Structure formats: structure tokens, C-alpha cells
Image (cartoon, rainbow, N blue to C red; front, side, top):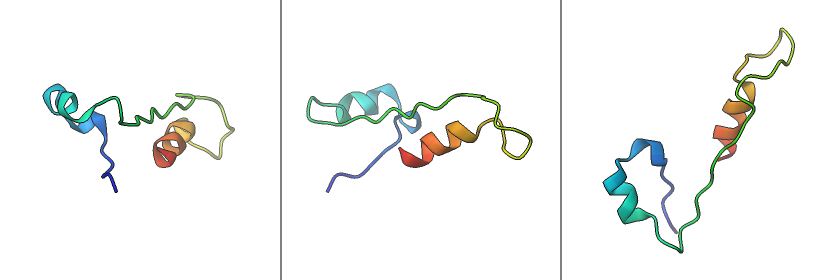
Length: 53
């Protein structure tokens, strides 16, 4: 089984070696700061997107 990695933690030279046509890349997209009311932080959607990635 392939080990997951965060591309943000690598240099571009390391990424170049890892990324092939067979690799799957998941890009977490969340609403950067969307109003959810006073009970949630502004980065709630980003935190959830990072978690699911």
C-alpha cells in the first residue's frame, strides 16, 4: 500500500520524483473563511478539508 504524503512538506525535487502518471493527488478545497456564526472558527471548512484529505 502506498504511503500518503503532504506535498507541502516536500521540496520540488522530492515531488518530482514522487509524482508520476499513476499517482493520485488529493487537493483539499474548503471555503477559506466563511461565516458559520459565533460558535465556529473562521477556518472550520479548511480544517475539515485538510482532515478528509
